[in-house]
Image (cartoon, rainbow, N blue to C red; front, side):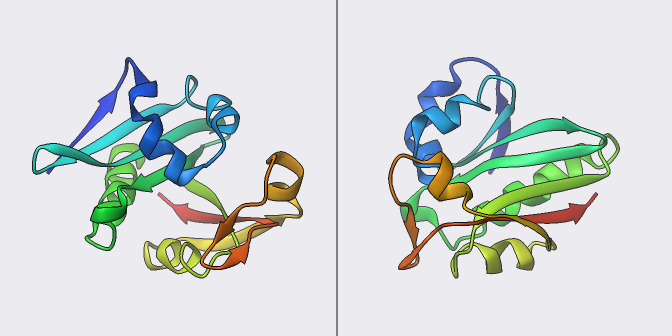
Length: 148
């Protein structure tokens, strides 16, 4: 297993990124200003993430996606651990925003994140179509925080 920063041609990872954020123009808002990391295992890229410096000691995990056939194998957790290890001496906290999903929230909480705050109507206000995950329409953005 190898995690590396993709510094050029980040859009080649768009198919995976769209699993974590299914609207391309939303990805465009952070892709160029963020650091993109890819996890390679068994010859292929299995997971990607994008983090951005939000100032004040805050690093934000904007996108985390694992290839569907590779989910539930620890790749997402390994990416979060990698970020914590890599940025622990440069940032005080790692934040992640996600929908109120029974699939995603328990993952982040199992990785040591705690709920911070809610941005009401984020998904209905910023996406051009309804987003569903785990059979539930996402409406509010739930922010979680992990001390580094």
